[in-house]
Image 1 (tube, rainbow, N blue to C red):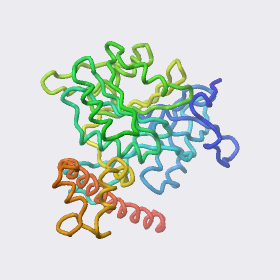
Image 2: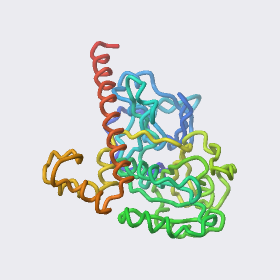
Image 3: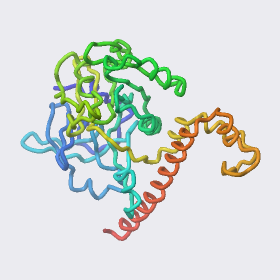
Length: 346
């Protein structure tokens, strides 16, 4: 018998559920087939037919890390009957970049749920991209968990401290750690996050070393590691699907396939906190509805002119805000459409 408390289950997930159902946690998703862990161990499960009738929005489908109530079947696939309320989730749009402009509606794609820390893995090679880091930070903050920036492959970059200091000057409240999975450098700084019953979600592009880091943290080869191309530091997807891994320390890791693009989903608050320096400047503008273009007394214009605000950072902020607002407009249509269809009994 498995104690689900070791998998993070606690009273906050308890609900008034019909007799005969037991709690479980989703550890893998393969299209319509789920692998869940419950008191009887790991079992295969599918969504119960009535589950589909209760779906209102895109985030109502279980993902890796979710707690669910299960109709257990010892002779075949069990049935997932109820999704428990999430304490955290990481979402993105199902379309990102230029493709989003050509679709009628944009949907929320939940990547993982019920985690305590978001490990944002960025390689200290050609993959280092401040725009991508800012996107991850914004999404991580709004997820409800604590972001941690992990700069991998420090053994390949003698100037890793420069990158650490650059990020720390901008994000004082976020832990930024340079590590090398190959040599073990910096891994001791991660130990404070590796506590029993805690769940970490790993995010990052292909080839940044997420699988190597999982292996280094666990102390054993539990993840396959692929090589990357030296000319552009791009790697193949080592992780092909999302999965929750239980380490010997009883810390859980949700590993995700690498993402080159991250479409922002309802991340307004996260973006504001990521660019809190810009938000503070906006409050100093003479007019509350300042467009930061031609108005007198604009603190943004002044900061750009005297060099207090980097112009590239300002452009990245505007880009993320615009993208997030665009997604909200298209997703609003999606929700109205679903509600109308539900009322009509479709």
